[in-house]
Image (cartoon, rainbow, N blue to C red; front, side, top):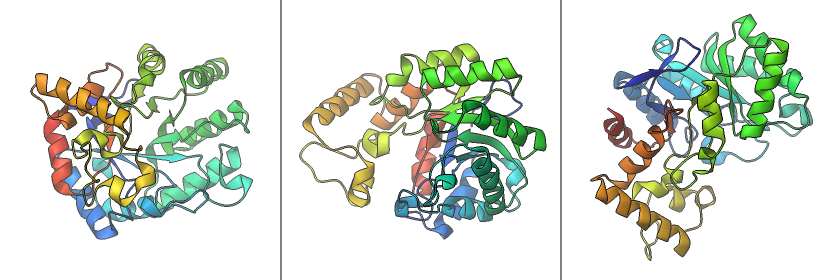
Length: 303
């Protein structure tokens, strides 16, 4: 599979990044391990997780850790073959110190993540979302210290606006802290807002964009049709609150995109993936799948 270097790093990553948000439920441990190892053997060298991921069982404040634990088992003997990314900042307990980007929380959670993942370092560690309750300098200094300590090689941000990323970059420049090398926004043909300012900023600053939700929870796979009930096994059928409401306006958008795809002799899925990867700032796309055949089809799109 095609690989591309993250700017300002020595990391080369596959165009497809294996996401693990559904590991645990609906993708059980055995199947998740099999899927991860198949991905590695078939060219995927980029794996994404987060300390909160526990599949459909996730609730606000629940402890997380499920996906990292599964990946720790899947990567036994494979760690050097992958670029491994995780995240911190979401709530993983009932108390204030169980979330956010305060120094104490970051330092606690990196050790927990490394233990679950059975490794000594992460290649990439994301601030999972902005934390307005913590001084920006405190958060960046903690991440910089993790780099110096060898617990992470590089760091990035997820769910940051252009303005928030700009403020962070300014603080890094003023204090000599290592800069983020990656940005992970929600981005799809149905959610293109980041094209206005965030993606141009990342391109100008040479920050790799690694978007998630590129298939918008399965809406851009062609499986949903006006007037039909969601198909069995689809995310809308299994976890409806994780998928947009199937409105007439949404189907207007989907049918318009399907028409565009047909003109270019593409399936809707191909159109959705290639339409995101074409942006010069985008290096890889995070995809979540339940079965090997789904991942194989996505790999073929970017091969």
